[in-house]
Length: 400
Image (cartoon, rainbow, N blue to C red; front, side):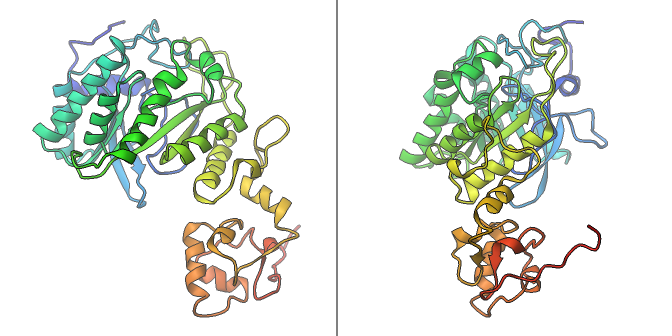
């Protein structure tokens, strides 16, 4: 059965219909998700539980708390023909559409019932990105200003959204995002030939950064500007990891994005790319690790261990691979190293680096047991450090 609007469906039936076709999306703050392509606004497969027919997923926030979030669309109808997307124009399946007020009321009912705490809201594109963005803003405005919702709202910026719409979205949302999908215009043409990378997709992120930099957030719902994120589809356009991470480095350093997500391609039936193989999940995982090195660990793009074809080794952690090339002959003295140097050591992250800095004000660190008491992962650390001028003793494995 094919229906463009699904006018006869109730709210629960619409959400259930969306869930049947949704691709996987990563946590808001958590680690890499299972492989699966993310359409320009498509939410994830639902979490398992008593309401597993609904597009509800548990996401991990920056403080580590799990939060149930409704990830949904205003409409699954779309006029764009992105080659990898389950909602692309011309694909024959039943579609559904919410009115902005209908969706806002449905979410608030679910929130009051304790089913969800937050919402990720996007949409297929109908009558252009500007018209679709207006409908998204209408739903968000109803939530905030008519229904009094004060919780988490992740709002999608549609391709081609105007600057005033971006500003209004930032006043209403906790987070905004635009999926770039590919690192270059040439790669994007292989995924979404009707989209323009710079003019339609990158420009809203540039405006968001400009607004954060030049305007006070006094009109925003909580007195703060929201964070921005993006996502890339990995493995369907022939792009290299170097291309993806070059774009990621620009987004972190110039536009101050909170996060870049990487979604490994997985073929969807009845789309132009359904004959391509799925992307190895390890590639997605390595991209996440490398992007965190760029964002949180002070690494430069040139320091990442790319192979000759511009990709990361699938079977080696990029930080460990860098350390094996660099720190074996120049180990880091943990009692004197600054925070940036500590973060270069495998097993030491921002939390454990701060723990080391605090502990050594009180005493000298002398062996691996001192580190383990601080919560430092020492499995891969020993070859790359000195403790009080000596390499730490390593316990050899019982079996080779």
